[in-house]
Amino acid sequence: MTVLALDVGERRIGLALSDETGILARPYGVYKREGGEADIAQLAALSRALGVEKLVVGLPLNMDGSAGEQADKAEALGRAVAQQAELPVELVDERLTTEEAERVLRESRMDGRKRRLVRDALAAVLILQAWLDKQRDVGGR
Image (cartoon, rainbow, N blue to C red):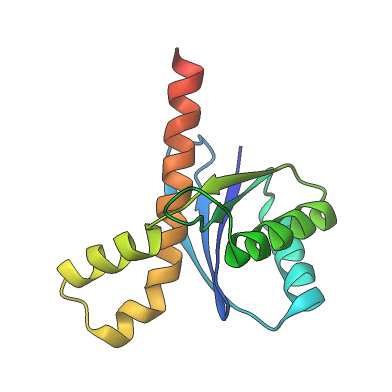
């Protein structure tokens, strides 16, 4: 099953894809947001073109687990893309994934400009890999 993960930000959306076996997540790239319906249409079209069977959307919850404005926006976008692409969607707690992606990239000694270009896609990979691992854990029991 091919799964597409979204790390939704204000200006960019990090994208990650699973391999066909559903074991590994890999970066797909970064979508630069145009806004509103254009984002929904572009992401739905990409999902169809890639043969995606499920959408996973990271929710940037507050540290206390509550949903704030950003989580509400990510959820609304994810649900709209899923509806237009006729896909099931799962929402995943993604607290600290962007910070973790930044840490990994900083430790790799990648310069700041390159880091900004790949950080969002790496955050999407972290979201998707956590979701894939959880599916295996649940299915393997």
